[in-house]
Image (cartoon, rainbow, N blue to C red; front, side, top):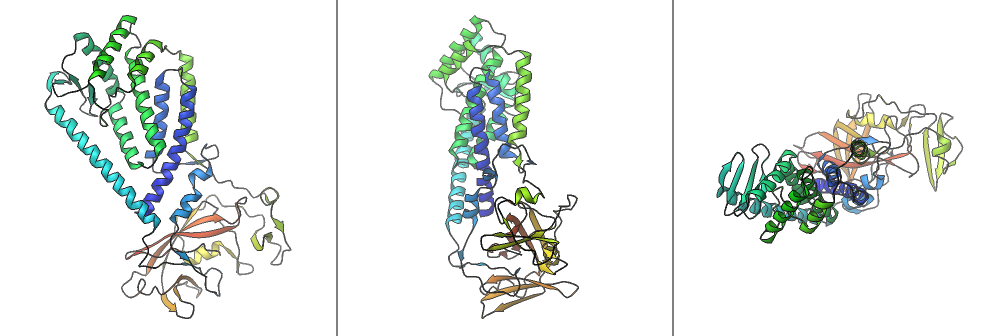
Length: 475
């Protein structure tokens, strides 16, 4: 659940950034028809609903928004301990996790989030139930038209079975104006859009920017619906429409979250009724181009820069003597020696989604000529994920080092091991599945390079639960 919460917060941050961009564009469109602003809000909704985004070199989202450093800190658990000395550089130092005190900040935040969602969903269900009860008391007066004493204000409802509900006491002219308005809502699927939007802000209830976005979207929805309804109306018809709005607003209840009709700012709506102008075909073409441009810029994530130009990328690193051979490059970063392959280029046809064995993972960072581990992968770059699956051949606990080791054997006799601080034999004892799955996140060792890497464990799952998190892994 905590993993889901962290992922949701990341999506929420991205959605908030997109919403701020749309708000800025909305200000530039103040004097233009409101349907343009309303259409742009759909980009925010799509960003929140899409489970994944493509990476492009032209995305407007900053890397810090897509991969928030704050979330990386928030998702780390446990108390760091001194790592034991190990014979192999790929044996991993770890964090000690006390099983009696694992309920920390992240778990508490996740629990609070779940309670908030539950409360808002119950409120939504209650309000929707009240609405359904009012609808049941209405009588059918025409095809898809219902009227009842319990209806406080006009609204449209339904996705497949579309209906319009009207209160009593409307004149024939007022009824015609309102029905025309509601038909526009139904034609544009506004009830569905509003309900999805409301459910999204429930999921992201902790994000005030998204609540504000939802409010502004509903205002633009109503303003644009007025414009569409009155696009061919005379001044007299607009006046009658404005009077109908004023009449309804006198006894109208609060906005119903499940409907497409919201009175909003009646004064603003009336002002807009008499001030909006028709758009030319040139203006429509320009907006369509802007809309699809915003789709491309805001629904994609920034692409990790890939370059093999050592002079450009490594200009801030200090080259050192090639002590391990001319086929490798050596750089100094502070007290750290970084070793990479000379003139190495990534094979773009390599399938990064296919799980590797532990031996395959080792080969990614192995210099075969010297049989030594270096800091540059054959096929992966910072930002990539490496999936590893292998069979645990042996589990043993080193009392002196206080480390539990998982050992993996290859066919050629080579063995690889991963160490966990503390005695974790109970987690890997008899009856425990021997097949384990690792998920590594490739991270850069220096911020201005796409080459020298460390690997972080994101997750290591077995049927019995989550294994304690591991410190950054350096080949």
